[in-house]
Length: 77
Image (cartoon, rainbow, N blue to C red; front, top):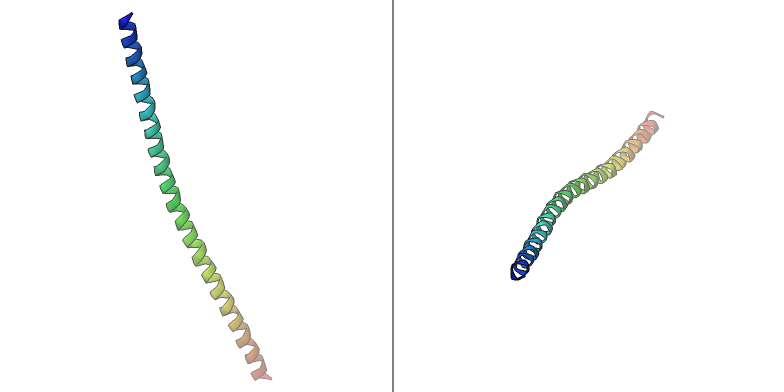
C-alpha cells in the first residue's frame, strides 16, 4: 500500500508540473501574439493619422485653387 501512495504522489506532482508548464508556455505565446498585434495596430494608426493630415492639406489646397480660379475669372472680366 505504501508503494501505491508514492506512485499517487509522484503522479500528482507530475500532473501539477505538466499543467503549470503548459499554462506558462501558453501565456508566453499569447503575450507574444499581443505584442505583435499591438505593433500592427500602431502602424495602422500612424497611417490613419498621416492620411488625415494629407486630407486636410488637400482641402486647403483645393480651397486655394478655387480661390485662384475665381480671381482669374475676375481678372478676365
